[in-house]
Length: 474
Image (cartoon, rainbow, N blue to C red; front, side, top):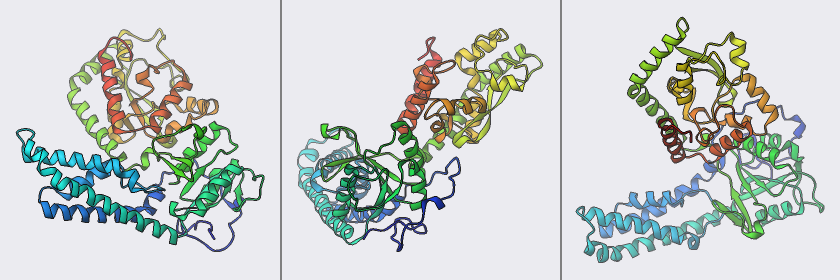
């Protein structure tokens, strides 16, 4: 019998009934981000795959002496063949294994003849060992997947909560419970009671999903058409991911083959695996390294521009300082002091905090107007990036006065604070700067967070630079 996840050891079974949900303390805001716990739980499977793949590739390398095992293992990893999955099939993996092998074969031929393509090496030699290399990986995967399925059948599985109380949700839970090779063990439902008596308890109503995740600490959430408005469900799932939970969603209209990406099937029912929060990804640390390197390079290369801007501001503002400091709200709602070149001196601190836009202010001089139009007034924020208060790319930070208003008015506004604020962002390169729609900014900023990648950051930086050098806004 599958039982509830332990509070002491995540994903392990405990004896006894579940504690009353009403005992759960209120959840503090904001939530700290913890690593994805299901990934750690599946680490043993990844190690097994690495060992068997490495042994098979090393054997072929020893016999041929023409390939390094690390090269193919790295290529297989880039193809996603070491990720945690519900189902593992050698037949499904054949295309990716073939492509990875072909890439390594071509690379080996180039290294063998650096002056160009070596026809003899590429046409004669590689087929002799490439076929053996491909076959060895397939054989290793066949053995590994058999061992993984056997191991899963003997284990209780990783605890999961099914979000939804209808008959369809019961069907999904029963499919996972009947076949342990998926590696997931539903422990209960969150949502309204089903029409028929379910085989698992209803842990909480749909409105208490986040509290149920905090109480029972599942490794997985299976979202199966719950009776929750989409806007509320999106906000709750984003918060649940911060607990380290892996979220799977049954796509709507899946009968019409809607889905894709990281979609897996459980008895013919597709489960789309949602990406973790960006801060939970291993490559997130690279974003910080790029921020530091980019900020340092910008401060050095743009030093003459800084000097000219500072002199111009000093001449126009006279007794007032060159830099303008203002409190803004950053990651997880934490305040910080943002730096800008002074384009206008407010009458008092109150005006600085509550006045929305100064583009049409008669006090704005020629220098200040030029700085704002060209975005040169934002350059001192490179110092904020070095301090770790901001990033080169991210949602633009706002003042607390407006944050309080927008959070009450626009769904998803608070979700923008899941990542550090940025000097530029996905919304800004689409023209959403200054006095533009907040609702659209929220949509663009959350789109950036959900689809974040290093490539997307580089694209935004390049488009921002192009926009600053152009007379037209992008």
